Length: 92
Image 1 (tube, rainbow, N blue to C red):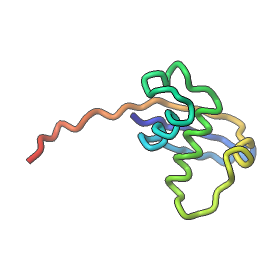
Image 2 (cartoon, rainbow, N blue to C red):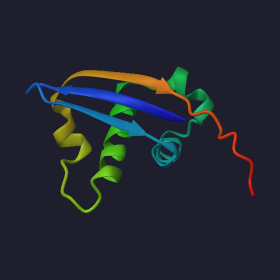
Image 3 (cartoon, one colour):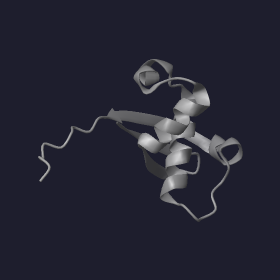
């Protein structure tokens, strides 16, 4: 499962982050929810958590603002659920 999260900051800057299984595993551990509950349980803080962790994964080794301090400058927050179909390739 992938979740595309589109963010527009107050400055007008836009960013797209894609939460993937590693971010959802962190979300499950943090919240105690499971992935099948995501469509019912995900709120604004959960989306910020997923986007922040996807951002950390993409920019590993580079300094980024902490979730609690730097990510409160969001103007709009949109997400699009995307599922990835299993590969139809057969193992050799």
